[in-house]
Length: 127
Image (cartoon, rainbow, N blue to C red):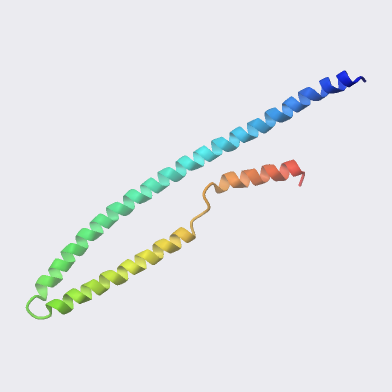
């Protein structure tokens, strides 16, 4: 076999290998796009629900504060308002702590894509 025959025989294999590699990269990029879109939709939904919940919670707290102030206006007005302020502060701190914990325990973004890249790397190494 001559050198030209060997190089001609190797070219289709090289082209096939490059083609397969490009297909793998394309599928991984598509997976990243899908995961990014899903993450965006999830975050927008959470933000909308969270803001709506906060709005209604704020309206309820304003109404409750006014009710307690009216009920105790003649006898314990400043004590009642201080108690409400402490309750609001404690509730706010609890919510902040829960939100912080949820952010720390959130799954890694693009976890499926990273797993696929790991599988590809292992397959290329022959592991």
